[in-house]
Image (cartoon, rainbow, N blue to C red):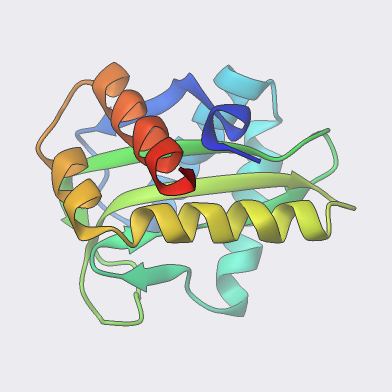
Length: 154
């Protein structure tokens, strides 16, 4: 499993007006709908439901919201960079400005976990996150994150 299998270039965005966790979840639902033809409201509801079990802010300004959906046939993702960090109830209590959302089929057991581990490993790299934060072009963000994951695998 690699990032280009999970993440489409059109599912990478820079968001300028997100001011809350809930608003971010709505933006992620909209991205999932436009990039993967997922029901946006179902995606938002599933993300918020998962978030109620425990926050997915993993620290260092990064969040990994994820959900299982009926209308997804394989694990897919969305990457967003926020121009202004928001409170996300992260484990280190710091605001987040990078979020990589994963949407998996309801029955995707190990594939969902493998994808989550891959994203977590990739975004644990502080130099990679610094490069992402230094760019505002979605195509560049896509290239940075997919090339970095290829380099990690080598």
